[in-house]
Length: 424
Image (cartoon, rainbow, N blue to C red; front, side, top):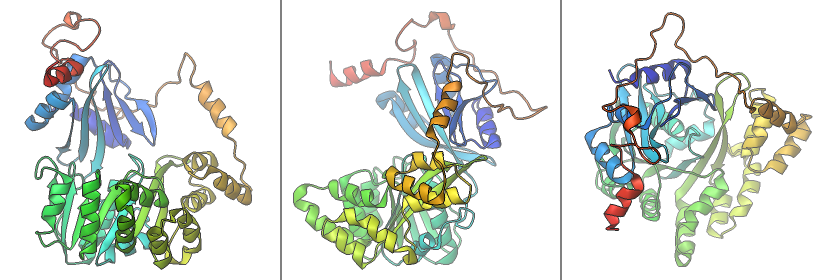
């Protein structure tokens, strides 16, 4: 068993979403949205970190990490969970972030997805986007939607991911999952190939560049249902982001294509609950004739107003979703305000509810814990009688032999590697 597996076990048991490993620092969990040190785990030197991370890294990713100073892959502990991994190098040395991917796919019912979102699963063609900042749960929502299709329809689904996160069993659908770097060279190459693989539904894990976006729109126009993700915070900004990717002389054409192919946008933001855990606030855009006309005519600034009038179709603005979470007492007014994009509009909603916004008190509370003597970290131990984490791996050389300043011996300075590749 790898040394880091003990941290993964603790991570799953306490319900943390991410594990952050940084050279010379104590490992940290993201627990219910907050960063907290892993109690009982020592600081890990850069040389030790190199050993810890390389112990679980596949050979091809070791080569990529050595060449590019970062790499992505998935790591699995059977019976526990899968983990999405990003290795990187920073000023302290090697580091990594691990995101837990539960073995069990949460259903649309468990996530309380609105009917407007599950209705997207029964479209025959078109483009549906799930958007939000990093760590907002886009992958979880998409996995629930694919699972819903898998149990309801008899279709062929192709997913293109980097890396593969949720592993879908075949229920009613045939599902082919392809990983960028392992099973295909790039998103755009896999997406072009998908058109020759007789798909009904294509999931694009990340629409990173202009060509991938263009092929996704073309695929949606040619009679396929395409799901994709973007790192945008609102429905209107999603439309603008897609159009702005293209040169100005092509934007009118893309507006026309997008107005006919885009069927919906789900923009989500995770909020900390009052007790513990997190809940998603969803902004939902259902593209009707009015929205399609606004996209085609370049009047995307009118989309929020159309969404407010489209409640019967299942549309919902981010502010309306945050207001519901405050009214149901799941989320504090201060947390909802921080997550709101239109803050003035959300203040008006809070005034209408008679809820007082007290951001000053929150700031004072943060200041009181930010002094020279910080509050102790929450107890993240596995419980009484549990085994302590395995000892850190030994290093081939004593730490004192590592040169002071810069990267430790045996690891190499990333900037020097870049210079060598450039012939400097």
